[in-house]
Image (cartoon, rainbow, N blue to C red):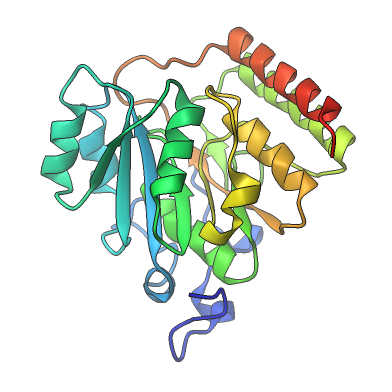
Length: 269
């Protein structure tokens, strides 16, 4: 399906809420679908949407995440990293039609690549399984793509976005690394290291990142900067991980991001 295919009578100017000054302030919390309608239903039926959800020991978080997932997505792909708890069983119980695949290597980057390559929808959405990203925001990302973007890039640092999870150290590191990428590739990214994004599946050759760890979002953003794709930032609110312990380590993963930036800068065009 092409990007121009929309339901009869669908008016993007009235039916979509995409402008930063039109997006409701989240005021330090997530907006749930029973509180406010962020976007009208025609958005999700205009195209088929595949959601890629990397998991590693997320059995306690999945009830919340899948409970907030829009029911009209075309496909849920759970990419499991050899969980030792009941993650896979819980996913199957809560979403019987979910496609469960096991990643071929280790790390978030590898898991996302496995999910992207398996996706069949017109649009591919990536988000985290720890409850920090809100699936109820997915229509907002789909709206940005339907109205002309090739890649909808989530950001916590514009009007309508926010975070109750990020530490001062991580915020400073993200700002410095974003500034470095912006200066090297003439971009204007407000958030370099956020894991809630969506794109047209036809853009996969430009989006696919050959890395294994948490540097995956940075590498994707740099590859996008080198492409001719239209990138639009979408406000998003990041909550705290609901259960379990994050594998993210600010200093270690910050250094991985910095090495990725250096390697991409030296890589031939």
